Amino acid sequence: MESNEPTPIEKAISIENQSLVNHVNSGLPRWLIEAAFVCYLLQAVINYAPLLHWMDAAHLSWLRGIVQTFGAVVMYFGLLRGMKPLYRPFTVWWWVVIALNLAGFVTELIPAIMFSIGLPVAVSLMLVYLPLGSAILYNYRGRLRQVGLWMVLYIMISSIIPVVSFLLVGPESGLANLPMEIPTIAVIVIYAWVQRRVLI
Image (cartoon, rainbow, N blue to C red; front, side, top):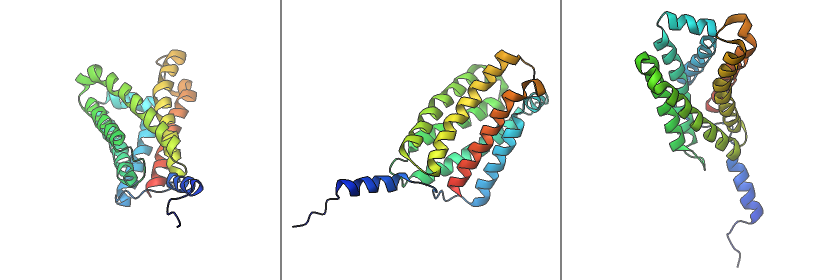
């Protein structure tokens, strides 16, 4: 009597096939994903320190908050929905990431609370992005693995380089600080692109 149980090789092939993910079906309209991608590109431009300081001086931090939050939340919601059928969807992690991004938006809208909750939110984002990105990187292959890799690089570069820049260059911005600013701008663009490729 033949057994219907898969052989160890068949099990290994099945796991391998499940882990190879180049596209997820989010159900979101393409125009919304493209709009989120454009917001990421605008975020990269806004991240240039002289422009960042100008927006703060012009009291336009709310606009920066909208650009940063819309792009991230749409992409993350798309990944959350698209990964649900996968064997490790990380649904709770995605909801936490979305909630923290929305909390960051609130701190941009209300400068008075920036100093009280801005730092805890930023630290919490790092504590969530790093394990989630690492888990995606470890569990999946293909384009989805790139999302995990760049999620880790994105939060590390965005968090560490500004501190290093301040210690080495001081509060100066512009050309003196350009070598430090290029990685923070480039990582946003690449991170946006790898998310877009998985969702479209």
